[in-house]
Length: 279
Length: 294
Image (cartoon, rainbow over all chains, first blue to last red; front, side, top):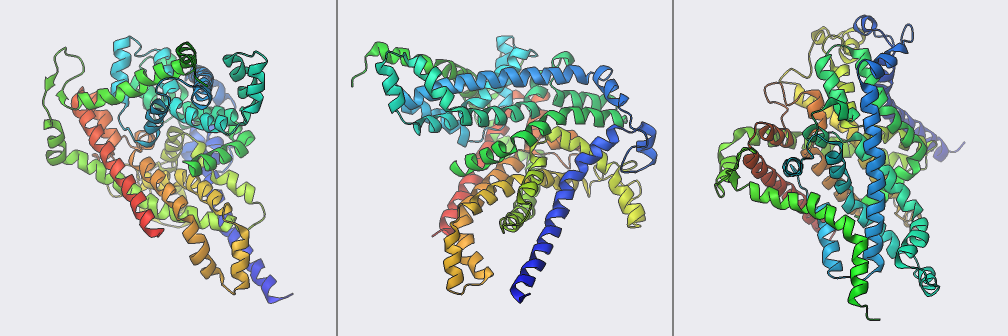
């Protein structure tokens, strides 16, 4: 064996040792959450065994029913599904308009829209709170949803417009001659072609809305309307030491995210990287 | 082709829903923030007292609490910029060496960033727990460090901020890693091959090919790190709520606190000052990277 090959072998081994160490550090806290969620309170307090002595799946039933995580989970599902649906519909419609159609102030409007992506606006939850209060939408599902939908507008329009810009116009021109309406062009031709970009949009916004906390904190007081991130903090505040139940709640909040992530990781990783490098 | 006004009006319908929502829920709140920052107002009274720049001046010169929170966020940001991004860069370089299982590493390193701040904060709160946390257990029983028995990481003034920072970096490095790796993969392979032919060693290749081509990407990651770290909220809220004795308070937790206490005008002035700081820091980073790139 030549020296070069041996050197490469050693370098590769060192590389793997480093990478595996970091990988374990990433996974361990999540594993610990899962494992602790299946223990008894006693076990959490007295032993540090990696796996539970007896797997208490009933913790999850209790978390769902007694600790209201079922309600929170369904709320989160509702906010995510409805929010993402409206974001995708509204932004694709607008992006198509910006990419293909002529109207007054098109460029100015587009730049104003995009500028909100670039300028950091901390504390915007204050005027949003006041706005919802004036509209009578404070502590309502509609109010929170409107904030979420508005939060996804600029990025969605930016992403989809650049996608539509790169689509060849010929198909649409042919369809236009055949008597297809403008809306028909968008609905039947552009939208189906934009499926990859729409997938990115759906995934990114789902994660954002599912994981959102600050607006839910500001807008909602009524526990029956809270999404799971907010519910977790309510639970943590009331039952401060019930760790297995809290870990079960955390797991319930995490499972959808991890499942979507594992199935869609190519999309997510590409979306993040591409989005960042373009911007 | 001239387009009739009627057609333009019809076309307007495409952007109308987005436009209306945008104006009401994005644009109006921004303008409202600016307006409120000049008024003293508790959010309830009909009457708002115009005070000009008074609140700005008060925050700038007479509010050590706010600047303290800014320093805390600055501490988190500085550590993230150096340690977290250093780690992200090192890992990206390692994974980019066409190593076996690179996709598995990529998936695992990006797991923490997809978890919510609340979930991450509460898991780590449990890990850090003085009596029942696994961290102290390992320190005491595996490493024999008796001084960590019942040591409450998150309620000790000496350790709370650093403990939170570690978690923030744990959650954040995968994000920088993914972007840097994507950046590395856009560098054409034949540049390295040509350098190899010319007899350049690994360090020279890094210095003359990788580093200069990666500067724009690294700048981007740095800006995202600064914006993300300075505006940290969920982690702080779920781990310490700003405690012990304000030692982990950051600007957003303070702004939220002022708002909760009904000082709406004051809180918005704070938000605007903080926004300006963020803009200036981002602009400075872009400026420096342009200089470096020349």
